[in-house]
Length: 236
Image (tube, rainbow, N blue to C red):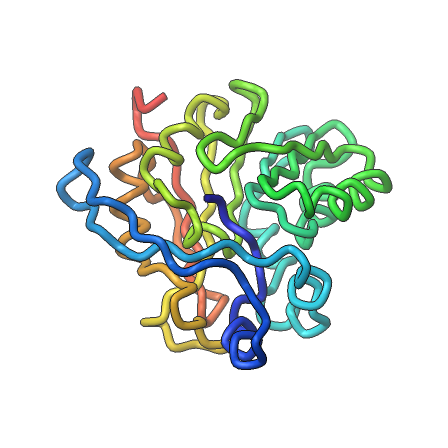
């Protein structure tokens, strides 16, 4: 399953109130592709009916720092960026401005219920294309993407190594991959919600097993890691 970029710190409160936020956690089988990749929990998908309340919460910008995220991505006018698991489109207007009228933003989702909100936002931006993918395959145009962004969604990817390998098919030479997510060990604010985080060490191991090497690490989001990878030679 793919990744829903929720304000996941709010999920424990929703559970206490009896609001469903997905199924029970699933467990990924141990990977045989790389000895450093271990078995770990995979979180359930975010419930689309809560998107307006949680994804667009008025206090999110203060801690998520979306302007700083986009600046750190170093997007250039004319580039193509793929927002994987775009949810309600929280980030796409900033990505749109960063790549300009000659660039393209792919707002990719797998949950049909979230597409109307994405399409409404895309209409006013001009350079955003909404794409319905699957849990295994984002279904982007091949060899087209300069930068992939997974914002608070990676912990929901059911087969991380296989999924990250799939991205090579859609990457241009020199493509970047940014993964930003909660890690409970960081103990920042807002705190990582129980069962809706992923250890940074696991992400590093899984990315390397899939042919992505760490290029940059940013530390301005206290409760989330921000890792930028580049393709390893011959990985595609």
